[in-house]
Length: 57
Length: 403
Image (tube, rainbow over all chains, first blue to last red; front, side):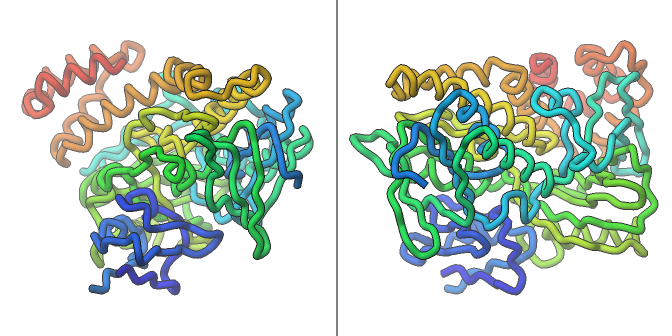
């Protein structure tokens, strides 16, 4: 699954629209990952400008 | 908040607020919802906009104009600086805004025009009836309420989810998502009336570094790189930006950190569906070269509200009837510029630093009063045959076609 490093994330939303499954959502000021939809492809990890996302297999 | 409106607008950025204002002025009952507690923050923007383009919609106001830009510098990978100024190149000159103030001004105008506004309110699901969007479920302060609307406008930005929930494919390919970081810096030695664009694969692979002044000694210093170019420690946008700042502004002070994403893909195949219109970044109408999206949001927001108000009055919000919005913006200055700049972007992302150096050096030698694409292409072929070869017939043709 995808781990959100909340100490790094600036809740900019850059990761959300590259997700092919629509598993991410920016809810006000936090990033929500739907663990049931996420396929752990890691595309969002590559898009993050700050390095706030990590894949945990 | 009522339970039924003529128009529901999701998102309180420039696109949503201008749509809400326009529709309310036409007499529609409008509700605009913004998921954040305050519109305009956090900023996710370099805040630049063309002067003439902005003036189509707003009279400039010193409360939200941070700087007037008179010229631009394009810096080649080898450090060569080329000046673009309006007399020479017909280049656009612009404003750098205070988006925090600008966005609130637009929301205030929407409210003054009669629109209802709800903040910290999230559209968490569309209301669909027989495949037609009929409003949304809105979450506010721990409760979910259904709001029905004849027409819904998705203005929910680069992180748009609403139209996806309605069945529209809004996924942006990774390589076409510019991943960005920016510092608002002060105490830096800059030209307060010039923007600067630094190119090169060591500086910003698949993108550029910008310096957008916000007054004396203060500027947005930011970077966008191709979404497929980063993703590892040391090569993320923030890493490149930190290196740039260390080199150019070692004594500057960072007073704000901004992150964000800008799509540089084609616009959505269709920006309308039954009962739904999509505007601004959510419609993927940000500029593929510059990443600018303020004008595009204002223009699509206004056009959607104009077409939408007619559709509501006629009682026909079918996709077929709303297509006039899609057709209008595609045929407009905006639609043509997006198409042209997409083709140019596709050529330029393939160039290496030597190609970029060669092109920028030779363009700088051109007589700007005779600047047009055909002359540009002739210039590239004669001065840089190797680059011309690399661009190929297809690349050169797309450059010519695009103007």
